[in-house]
Length: 184
View 1: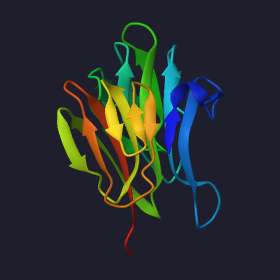
View 2: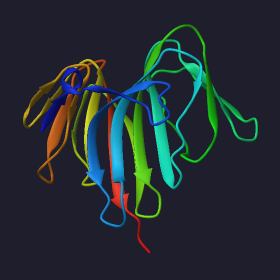
View 3: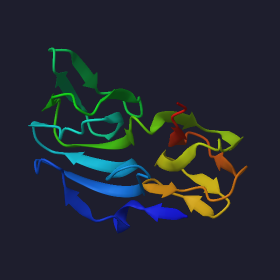
View 4: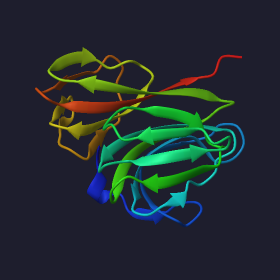
């Protein structure tokens, strides 16, 4: 299934201090809420991130100069390199300071006690099989050819068949969200 970012309605963050566009979500089989969620957030002012206890988060800058994330113990991470993933705990208190203007970022959130998530960066030119754990591939730059059609920047693809193959054109960057069940 191909998903176009423009078709995803912007919604307020859980804390109401920003906006996000949910591209895909899988509900949890145990308890309430989501098992995993992929979204694109727009950050246009200094604000704390919403807290998500029990959730592992991975984030990657898509557009803009980025921001500095100050976490619980004063640890600082500069999210300033496009498509370089950073993982952190959803329950962390994270305050954001913009480097220079608004940004857009890619987010993968995974319920920690049920699954493990990983955000991979794939760069073209490349033709490859899609790992079974892949829940979504997002085109961040260039274009990606999938069995269901071409992805342009801002499009995502949810693989529906095992052993699918895709092709990334020259200078293409795709972000792949992989989620696998946590083995007891």
